[in-house]
Structures are given as C-alpha cells and as structure tokens.
Length: 67
Image 1 (tube, helix red, strand yellow):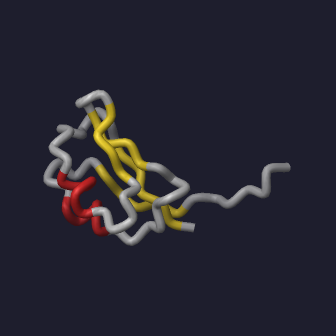
Image 2: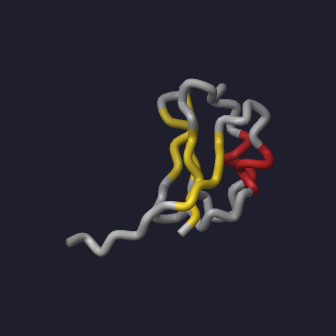
C-alpha cells in the first residue's frame, strides 16, 4: 500500500501539497510542517510532485491487520 510521508526537517510549510491533494489528506500543522492523514491518503503522488522543498515522498507501507 502506498502512502505519502513528509520529512518535517525539510518541509517549509508552504501548503502547496495540501492545496494539490485531491483527498484533502494533508494539512499544515502548527504552521510548521505538512501532516499527512494516512487514512485518507491513497498514495497518488500528486503532493510529491508538487512539493517545492522535496520533503514529501510516496512510500510503500506494510499493511498490518492489528494483531
């Protein structure tokens, strides 16, 4: 399963990723960095391409069943 993750150290909190996200899965948290809601994110990569700081990347994440 693919999901977007953000490197908070590189993020400049510009909000471009949040504006581009078709699922509204990204918000700017505390005016400091982009936070990705992994329940809403579908891993489309639009935010990764839009990020001017290169802080967001789409990664394959392991799916766990909660056990």
